Image 1 (cartoon, helix red, strand yellow):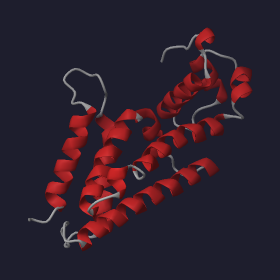
Image 2: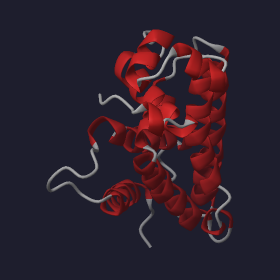
Image 3: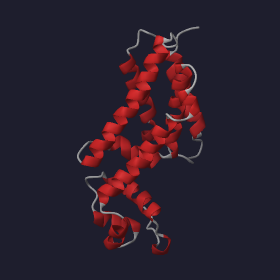
Length: 197
């Protein structure tokens, strides 16, 4: 991890460093001293901008959740057949995960040990529920197989999408672009879920 220069320190760069440290050490295993050393600034400088590490966690998780919930407001997620909306949400969820990789990684790793983590888990469940409703509607429309339980299909879909955080590393030689990965997720998932027409 590189040390941030004091003269280029901003709340945004502090947040980026905090997310990196949280992902590396775990939120519970991170102290303000760890954050201070990683950012190259004093603890008092950190406290000048945030109340503590839980506020940094909330800011980071909010960034990931705002990206995900923003997808549900996009026109292609709101208009048209449920199957097309579901495919759009799946593609965009994959893209947002890769665009905001450290932030979404942190969101996926929260375990409910703090108020902020419990809030994040509740928001994640809410997002998953909205996607599950789209999946149910697509099945009711006859566009998805009826022999796969909607809750199970939702879990499998998110399992595939969320696994991206474990292996996707942008900019590594020969790596697929985020658009290629997102398209592969949609093709792979819906080849098995769509009904034959």
